[in-house]
Image (cartoon, rainbow, N blue to C red; front, side, top):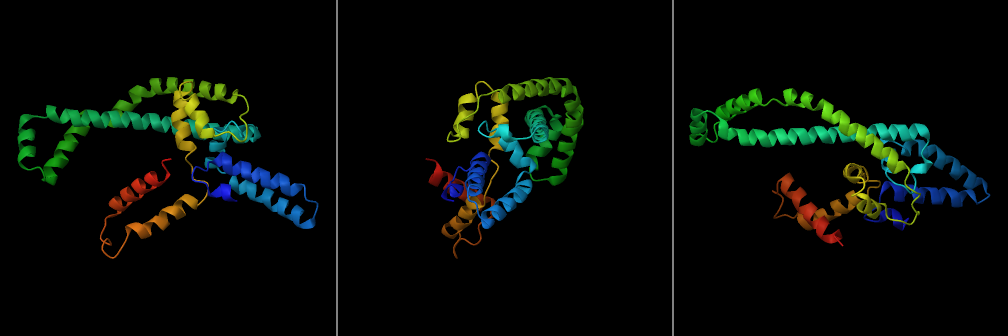
Length: 241
């Protein structure tokens, strides 16, 4: 049970503990043990949601336990996430271009914006001007061919990854991916997101416990974003080792 409270608990770690409990309980020949096994198996169908099996897919310790249907479902989810990342990268590049293009606006727009920085109407008109000339929806379709090519390569890498040898159950899957990021750079980026799926409430409960050190009678007027930043820095400082 202590393992389930560890700070770096991944889906794979949780499932291995689940399997250990199931296997050891099945060795006990009692009515209570058999009833417990039955309930464990019933609960497993709820446990295996899309996020869970996607994280299992990226864990070479346990991905061989997935059925063909579960494996295909995980692939679909992972590919969808990858496409979303590609689209976000496109949008970020366009936003950078929009920021740069502000220097190319007509001179009268620049002067007006300089003298009325906080003028919401003028800001709205400038943003409309930018969107008209650099619209996201007109730029993304031109990338469809490139995205399709990237997705095809990504699928091939997924197939290659499934050929990786079985990883020992005591191994650290996070270290595994750090070692493989040179071989599978795109898979590595997606795996970082998928494997970050919280498995238990421990990390959330610890953050709530930290609130008592941040919130006080003298700090009740802190804004939400400031509290989040303080929690992030505090959590990183406590667990960076």
